[in-house]
Length: 284
Ligand code: SF4
Image 1 (cartoon, protein in one colour):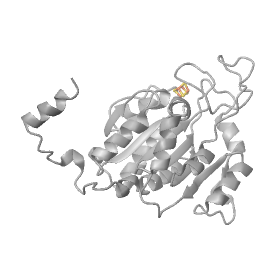
Image 2 (cartoon, rainbow, N blue to C red):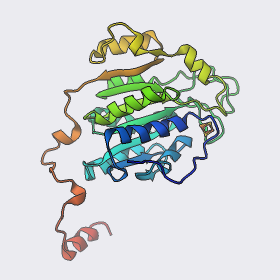
Image 3 (tube, rainbow, N blue to C red):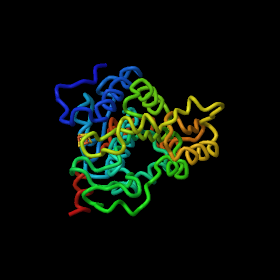
């Protein structure tokens, strides 16, 4: 149940991604998983390195494509717990189409976004999560475009588990990841994970001043989608906790006609040499 490996992360000291890594490892251990029951699939960006830092099956894929790969892994082996991960550029820019379709599909996996509101790996350009007016090398006079609102987007795209957290709240973040993994359907967890090197606006102190915990809002009910949307709008999206959960909606796998109880990965597909060669011929 130990999800640590020997690889030393090369994130900058103080990067928020360290806590996300620790929270995933703790959540998996708390649930009682073993490393061979977990697959972590990541995209490109500083956040994308995370799949190499967790003892599990893993794949460091291509930019914005962690979700298609993760969905394929889950469909091939439904017995694996699958976590897809990436940054805000990965998930809300180049990978945005995949994010929306995975949410409406409600496939049973957990998507963790390390949202630092900047492109860190390429040394600090504006991301779709940077605020209007944000000054970087790519927007020296300030970003003109407005920002993507990932949690509002998730609510309107049909995600059945929508949550947000802050990387310093390790206990809360671990509990939310556990809840996301245990949720039967698609869970998106947006984690404010500060980039201490390039984002000098959205710092740890900035988040501490601006975030509101949903647990402090009286009578907040995560099963009420309308309340969830209104609360997000009132707080400009800056809330942490489980924002919305629909426990009744069936997952994609449950609705696929003829999807076998036995994972595809462990079935004998009985493809003899002849049949295999015929199949291959179709592609050459
Ligand atoms: Fe983290 Fe930013 Fe350093 Fe990347 S550049 S490792 S996001 S602090």
